[in-house]
Length: 486
Image (cartoon, rainbow, N blue to C red; front, side, top):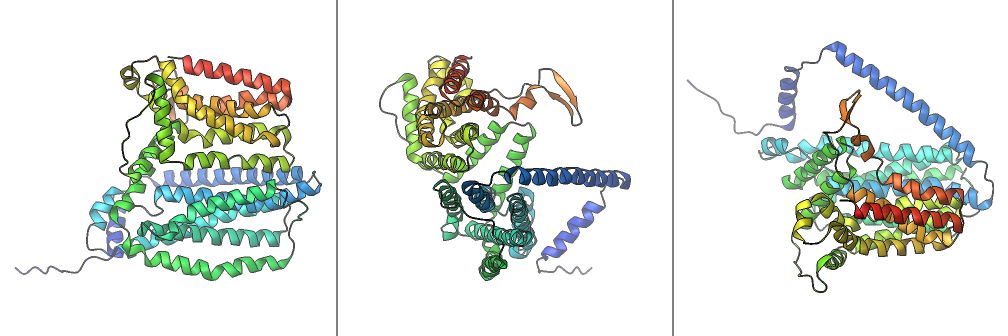
């Protein structure tokens, strides 16, 4: 008996065909169920789409009431700021997740074979490339229409945003294949561009600007077309150089985040991201703390962490810029809750020590001090930095006493977010369309924000010394309860 064994490796199309035929042969969902799910998806899109259109129209009518030069200029620059912030956030997410990734099963059973890796990843690369362009164009055109831009210039801005999103994604793919590539700076460059745009608004540069109406703005996306095509082709050519470990790393992070967010536990999602970034940082030089012992030794540990990652302090300092942009736009007392939430989120990496203490009861017992003493020592460095952050917003707030209220309110919200226990699945359950869920599961998504709203309410109703004093007292009481709780 003669058996012909071919030495040629299967093509990606043949492997996908085998996977497709295997999946189709084991489909168990009936056609009625599939049609019902498609009907629900279409109904959801129509309902939320109509709500989004109504919200955009109402927001456009609300912002059109202010006709001063400052309001018109800030409103004109708003869509550009939305695009820059969106690109910065997208670059940060892509740097965490890949931007290309594959499951461990695909990595072990497909990418470890002699299959052409570039041809296997080609479909995923171009699909995500067009998806990145679409997700950048939609917020851009919605922001432009809300700000009163003409439809022609709004379309030009949407195309320019899509082009920049393609450059961001393709540059991230190039950086993924080359560790020391200059394209790894695309994330910091996007963040600096967003901060520079906010600083320009805060400095009054955009005051007096009117919404653009000229058709010459279409030259901007036309000028971006050649470099966009070049970078996209460059990322396509680098697909064959991607390593398997770089592809599976992002998939593991995505699975961990999906599991944490399924329980609405944002703090656990942060733990997953922190573990991922620490693993990427690899080995650091250990340092023996020198100085005071006991709870004050946690202050030394926080200072060591800041020395290793000084970017955390720079991020908190950059978060001050939106306060002056809001002040230029005439936000008034609304600046207080916005800055409390921004300070709370910017300071999350500063509370890693408190986060470890809140989730590791055994470590608290080993340190040989009371829990409230350890929490107070872990909060000292974040408290100093957040108070300085609040004082940095001094000239953008209606009253000088609101500056420490912003810093202390952000600290109270951060402490609430860090020390909150995980969901208790032994508690009372409620019936939902997704099944029985504990009551504490629904409070996870709102923790931190609830304290931010609580300490901001007095400043909203009384943006003076009285409101600031009440806000400070509420923040102090909240911190005392959270730190002293067992």
